[in-house]
Amino acid sequence: MFRLSKRADYGLIALKHLALHGEHAHSAPEIARTYNIPSELLAKVLQRLVRKGLLASQAGPNGGYALARGAEMITVIEVIEALEGPLLLTPCEADDCEQFPVCSIRDPLRSVKEKVVGVLVDTTIHELAVN
Amino acid sequence: MFRLSKRADYGLIALKHLALHGEHAHSAPEIARTYNIPSELLAKVLQRLVRKGLLASQAGPNGGYALARGAEMITVIEVIEALEGPLLLTPCEADDCEQFPVCSIRDPLRSVKEKVVGVLVDTTIHELAVN
DNA sequence: TTATCGCCGATAAGAATTGTCGGGTATAAT
DNA sequence: ATTATACCCGACAATTCTTATCGGCGATAA
Image 1 (tube, chains in turn blue, orange, cyan, red):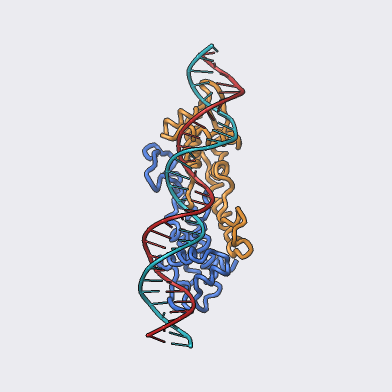
Image 2 (cartoon, each protein chain N blue to C red):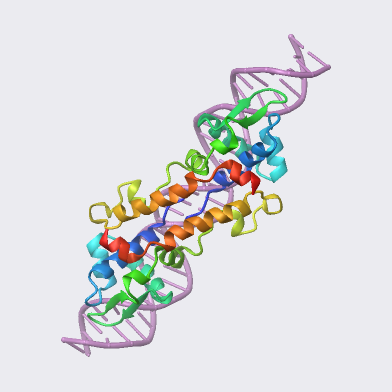
């Protein structure tokens, strides 16, 4: 349906939270409670963002997550692609679909996709945080 | 996953086909055969595009579909929204999700969505056809 | 009259997302 | 040391969405 997954939604909410309250680490359960997000699912999301280098984590009591870099250095496209995989406008680009040999729109849509990606590259977590 | 549905894919392929070969009407089975698309599914897609005013149809033998207006007057966003409903970046915008009262990214993401829509408004079927 | 095609709703089949569970390791505080 | 909190990770159930199919109907040209 051309919409963000909840994974990505949760990730962006958490990143904005960390951008706004970045003095110390915040735990997954704490953020989940604040935004009414299923705790274990948010944990999964944050773990993946750590693996992708967007977050830093700290185990133990008083542990939690913090941004791995400044909020203005993290783009929305990074978050989306970290959580959903590369942004593909057409099914053809991913699996070789039945239309592959005769697909007439793959190439023209590629340039459309690049413009869309451009928008998401130009939007940072910092922008989400101040607006 | 932030990707076009096959419905939209099929619709764009068909519209480009009609833009390129617009002398007479083309039937759903014919287009489906050409691009290896399940015939009855493509029929459904084209019927919906008729209802939305993007295509004109003609019943009977030698009947089929043709563009309702010039290819440069049909935008990609019209096709996507006709087949997938309005483009919503966040789940929040659609159903009232569990985060609604505390969602911190709904507003900032709205402006992101508008930029994305802008890209798709600026792309016409004619552009797909010549590229 | 017949064959072709558009039109529509209902529904099955398949895939992806969302959410849950269980078992592990790290670490700070007591 | 022990305990409580939290990160980490894979597997799996539940749910939802997408994709595809089916059956019956009306329109129209040959």
